[in-house]
Length: 223
Image (cartoon, rainbow, N blue to C red; front, top):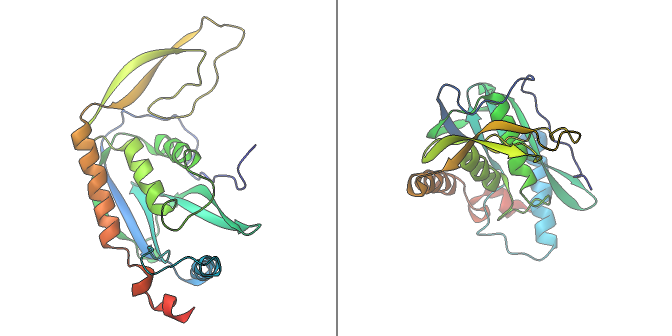
């Protein structure tokens, strides 16, 4: 069974490459207003109606994503049938959106590889949005885990009759008529676990420090 809402990939079609020129990786945050702001008010109201205490929960008015090059990669959520459903989205950065940037590492993934990793990350998450533990921050950490070079080493290996993945990049099924076919693909794996975990810890701390709780938000007091 498919997910409720399709992912949206705006990166032009091309070959994924996980050994491209290194680029800086940022996590980016902005205050959500306008129509999206109305969505967060609705989300908070839904949680209140369910009887949960909101005070210590992170404010959904502060949205997080991953920014590399010209594209940002993010979790989106749409309400349907009483629930908020997660899906993946990317787009060209627009500085009028007033993103705050925090550098966290580097990647050798090109834009197509990052988009594929974004789809992989969202597919690995529960489809239902949860304010505390299944949100844009969790997606951001998952995508960083897949694409960041810190603590990683790349090797070449062969897969036979598997869905090909080059550094978590979804590929095509091999030809069923040729069961002996093997394709050499590039795979990234964590070699230095300490360096990799330190990068993720840094990103988590940045998001935690720069996301107010709902108890600190005026919007919480108005609902």
